[in-house]
Image (cartoon, one colour):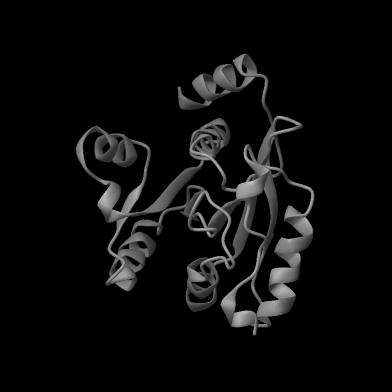
Length: 185
């Protein structure tokens, strides 16, 4: 049912989807410059029948927003003990259905200096691959990009992200933080 609804909504708003369906991994979505990014990412996931367990800071899980976040698969992230949340998610992922841990690596919809490195650390520590997702507002496209296993060479791995996101433009281009981690030195 979700697949049909998502397909209808995407056609109605004239957005197209592209890419190959990922199976398991750590999802990085960018550019993250608007709350509409989340809506389009959910529509993309529903269109392809994929569960995204989006990590969201626990402070946002209040009132109606908390209910909505939970209903769409978001997970409360206790930033004081993130390892517990990740461990629970990995246990949940034991089945065979497509499943992704979603992280907004930019961390904010405003321009910053660095991305948050949680996605990279989770992928390295769990052996899960990193799947890149994107939206491109000018072309009205949302989709899946490449999936790769991080090598441990942070700069080389981030070059993959920089190259992929170089031609992607969010709703508010001035808010995009170029892919760069503090760990790159």
